[in-house]
Image 1: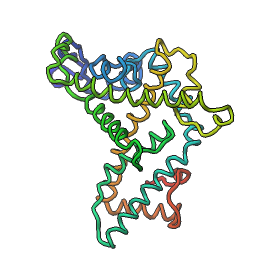
Image 2: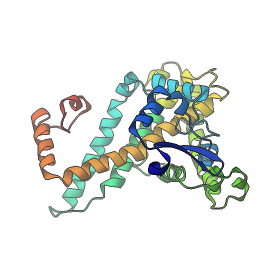
Image 3: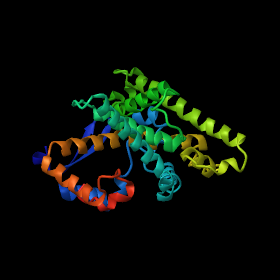
Image 4: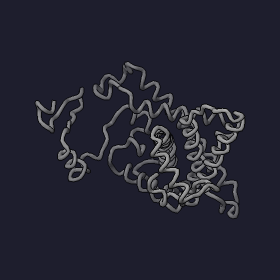
Length: 305
């Protein structure tokens, strides 16, 4: 089509005018010179039914709500200082997974054992996110295991539903028909997610009421920080509870699937390219040694990896 109509042309996808760009120069113009004009997102069924009516950071249109939530998430919740305070959470979860892998080796009696690393990485990243957000570990014991599995399933379903074809996104008056049942699935998934997030927020608020001033000086998770920071703050019309849930959804949902997929691909590429794996091993032996695990402070030295 670019050969016929040129590097930049318009299409109409249903009711939506769409710009098609097929040249590097035009793309650079869109994302540098005119980046603000292209910074927003279209209003879709996923944004309406999964993202608190287009308010979540990952699906919100560019505007005051998105800017305020992104600023708060970056400055208050995901600041380097805050992440540094919770570094031990990440280290602990990695140690737990390493112990589980060692146990699998011992149980195999020295025989090779097949391990599906995808679900293991998924559980690890999910557990890290939940511990940093809620201050509790779930997927290692029986307590609340079913609830967390349901939440994890709902998050993966949310990621899937964000990418499905919904006819009403292109022909809005078809929404009431819900031809493929996607909107019904979105509503069900949203109710599961919102129920768990609302419970977490209320548990933390109740704990704040019950604790004395001295007890409140302990380690704070993300919800504790947000309850303290968001008190009396207006987020472009959103109440503080909704703002907290929006950021929780972005932190847990945005990092779980993408991080696990990235680590899985990295491991697969290493295992399938022996010379690369040997170089990585040499670098690890040089900068870390064989008597301890890799720590976050080692990362700047692991240039090749």
